[in-house]
View 1 (cartoon, one colour):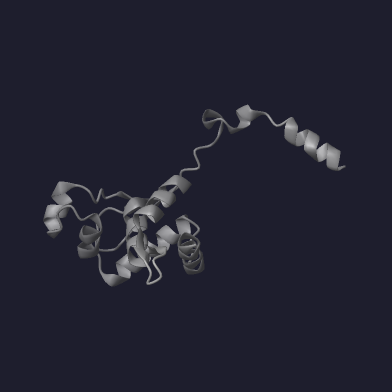
View 2 (tube, helix red, strand yellow):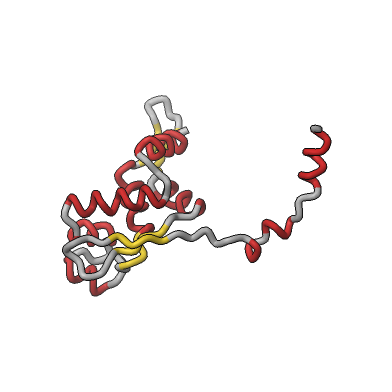
Length: 146
């Protein structure tokens, strides 16, 4: 029986894994917040996007013994995930940033736009869409630290 398993693995067709033969897997969701005329549109992040965000939120320093230690700035990690997940409105639009007085600061713009309850609802929707809960985020931070 073990031989049959190995044989089926060998017979797997590589074309089944080619980009053009795989569903995109891109998921988007609208999040309607009462104060805004249009809904926010959020997307699920790809693995490479999460790795990039993780890298951007990680900083290195030396401990007293001289060892290089990597730490994750949890706040920055969450902020980057939120910004990267938002498709609409485009938080990098100059007009939007100027309107809220947060030039070149997409998260700052979002933070100025939203009430605390709205930010919480948006963050929850992003976490749900990306299948991330607080335990997963904590585990992610621990993995990055190691």
